[in-house]
Image 1 (cartoon, rainbow, N blue to C red):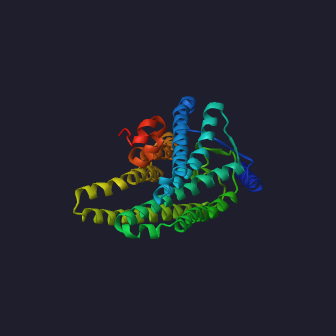
Image 2 (image 1 turned 120 degrees about the horizontal axis):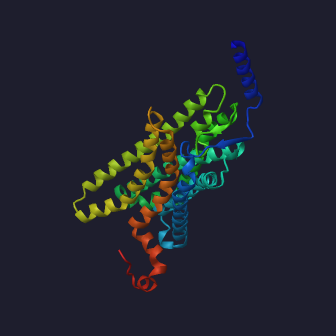
Image 3 (image 1 turned 90 degrees about the vertical axis):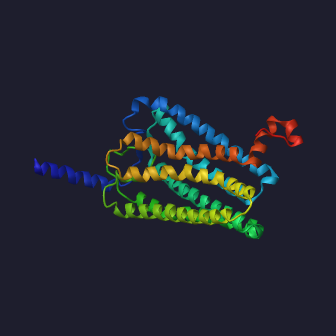
Length: 331
């Protein structure tokens, strides 16, 4: 019996090494909630539609309205574009799993999806840092704002965000794609998440695990530290103002950005805690992971639309044409 077991293990090992790259993976969706997949997909679809409409509206309003061609709104366009990529790279597949039982995803598509999810999540964090720096200069160095945030600098910031996100995740994708995988190739997740795919790998995954932790810590850790420093300096500058109206105006200009930071970083914190928890149900972990890619893209345009008067005016203009000519809008 022992020899037979050893023979089966060795044949499995040979099979894994001879077929290191499977042709397809199977995505389970939300394990434990298979019976409710059909109904869970409806709120997911509604959130996706709201995210698409909100972010496309932001992009359209900002690009077509000359008065919004300012650095703060350019960074908001970057954030909207990243949110569209994050949701579109995952939600259609989640919906097809729930409604059409289309669980298969090719190995190449899985690697591409993983790359988009993790690289654009890193870019999202970097854009938040750029927006925090924008608010710091606008409040603490207002006389230098127009000389610092010229179009050339904004273009360089955009390129830095793009290159940094791509460069950090490219080595990780190379490590993942070269691993041998042992069947059955079933991913216990709704999308190709890095750690979920690694569980199928046969061989030493420690380099992948270490690099993934280092990349996530570097991106989220460094960005959050610099964002915190920016807002400490902003808070100190605002509290030193003698005018109460000036304080309120300064806090108002930062309110939207702070809300977006909380919306994006709070799910990251919960995910970090879940990976280290012992008694957290798998279906709750995956539900929160799905919401992490859906909730921020849905809420970000709503937050900016409600709290930014210039954007709200442009969005409401078609519905109040007479009032818009006179400069009156509902508050």
